[in-house]
Length: 188
Image (cartoon, rainbow, N blue to C red):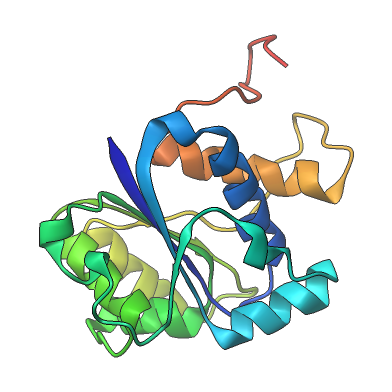
């Protein structure tokens, strides 16, 4: 059974984290635990972009950014999926450099060292060479860069539908089963 870590950084794109958590609530039969780390900046961005504090209402375990007693600060807790959504370039850079200075970067380091699934939803435009090299480093270490780049072939009709195109891709990468648009198939 999956044990999932969601890290929400202060990059723009709180809608991706909201859509992910909304979807996971509906898929509760596919995981044993969900631990959430949300920075203060992430809370500010959520409140600014989504005009609410609904992040307080999810049935997941929330951890402070410096709580190194969180179970997923160690590989022995066997959390097997980590999604950083949205992932700021600062967080991405610290993960790429192996700097475990908070719970987000420590958890990512644990996931990589244990050869488990790390998915970083990079949220920046344009990328500079440092960003690209950091993404290369994470990819070579076994992580997955999943840019917050929505697709349009499913003909999304709302901001949430558009964000869900990225969330569905993340869940596919995490091997979480759900119904979503598939190119060349008539399932939605």
